[in-house]
Image 1 (cartoon, rainbow, N blue to C red):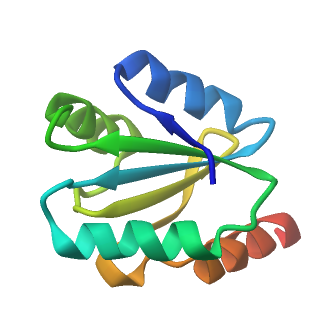
Image 2: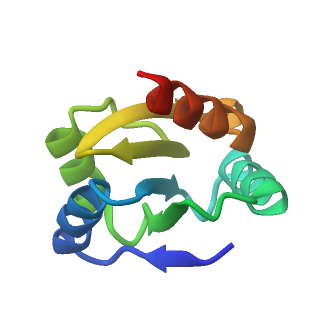
Length: 114
């Protein structure tokens, strides 16, 4: 799994724009939280989604960007949190141990049938 590290609000805007061409995942991670580490490990161990670009935000280093994500994408802030974007919209949002590759796949499948 290849993470694109998020370090600016501009990168969030670029991911939203890129979601018109390819699914985008934003994973908000707290580096000191064991649940967040477990969610990240589960994602990385099962990741087989070539059609999804993955972005990683270190919440502790970039708190203001996390707030920007919540405000601009109109999602409630969680940590850890995974957000799936398509066509500039959030189509899947999960947190903690509900984060799973299988759920991402289901959301993509549903999105493509709509």
